[in-house]
Amino acid sequence: DAKTTQPTSMDCAEGRAANLPCNHSTISGNEYVYWYRQIHSQGPQYIIHGLKNNETNEMASLIITEDRKSSTLILPHATLRDTAVYYCIVRVGNSGGSNYKLTFGKGTLLTVNP
Amino acid sequence: EAQVTQNPRYLITVTGKKLTVTCSQNMNHEYMSWYRQDPGLGLRQIYYSMNVEVTDKGDVPEGYKVSRKEKRNFPLILESPSPNQTSLYFCASSSYPYSYNEQFFGPGTRLTVL
Image (cartoon, rainbow over all chains, first blue to last red; front, side, top):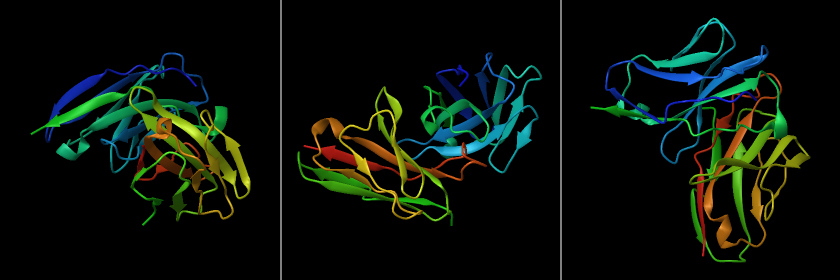
């Protein structure tokens, strides 16, 4: 799996958009970008994924640059409940990979302030 | 509601006393997995299962056993727990192969071994 780089922490005001960046400059053509988050001590939660087109679902939007070397997860109207560690993962789509496991890096701690 | 459930959520036990942590999913997922999460070490995979009666070791299988007799259940067994197994445990499931990387995680089991 390609390596990802994320800022250690970010702050966001409640009600504003939270934009979380991720660099994945070694991404391969068949690798997808996945985002998960983990609210303190809860199970990780899948958010969204994409290959090269921008994606949107009820939780967030994912913007992937044209060269696919970086992406941004956007939470359009952040709430206090969005305070969590956000993980960007690059994986070959629909494939187990090594040991069929998900490997999370350190992620970005997003703190949404009132 | 689609979900992964784990029981118990919290457990304090003593060294050597056999215990089982149950995991159940209601999404008819083929793939299930157990992870442990420790401060500074991230999520580490213990065991995984690609389908009924098919299980394999993850990265840290020592001291654990699993079984997959039914598609929905994937219990984690600690035959003789030791203090170094004190951790936060997560069960996960996904549909394989079509949406393998979109894993659903349980709420976690916090285990303390004295």
